[in-house]
Length: 330
Image (cartoon, rainbow, N blue to C red):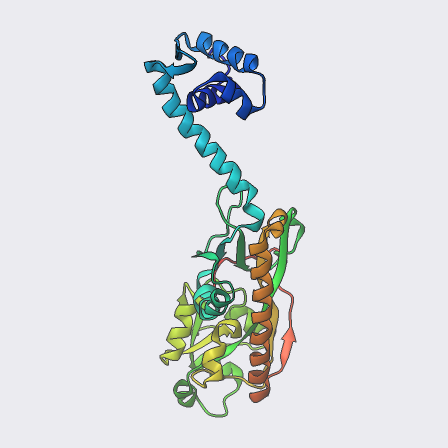
């Protein structure tokens, strides 16, 4: 069995080799010269080689000592750097952020310039990924996820907060709406239309139709896309009706490029976008600043959203999704 490594002895050795004398090394280490000499002696006995030879009042390294000094010096420098970095963690000017892809592209990216302008010296790293962060294995400060039940006890030890609600309704291009049967009931309308679904959305067509008491014949023409951004593009191109979130589609609805299909039916609202991180990460200034900034941006978003709802005379209905249902999609 290998003998236990005496890290203290390597520290004393590296200091003596760097300072040139035991006295100077003892001053730097704030110990007595005899304590330094004892550690060097123990290390030489442990390794079975001489590490120093005396040249007058100074010590010079043997060949074996030179080899050991190169390795120990590099290792101790890395440890010192790591210690300094850990000491700066709370006030670090780097923010590592993960978001779901469609939210990152459709909502966050158009607003990030404001954050960068406010904090020009910050080093921002954004990772758009469908999979949630494993904070035990990955270097990430904060994750914004799309899902329900993220405030449950399953996330004990984590800070979770709702950063945005979803407002879901059927949308399509004005030209596609004009091609649909005039005066048709909602059931006949959706039977005649091509319905576009986002595979990872919390509220999909079956749930929306059930929530509104609409019974179709069950032979609907459907397109299932993996990302909300893809579903929205299909709707913009006139391919069908998309059931989508105003968190992602608000610019197109505000500009009239997408229009509500059933303005008499309520917009379904529920908590959907959550900030998630280990509770200890709230000690980091970068995390707190970003959360405050995001909250302010969400308020501006809601002001625009309320204007759009009023413009189209849309009513809102709050619903509760299954607390165990989760999605890592939009």
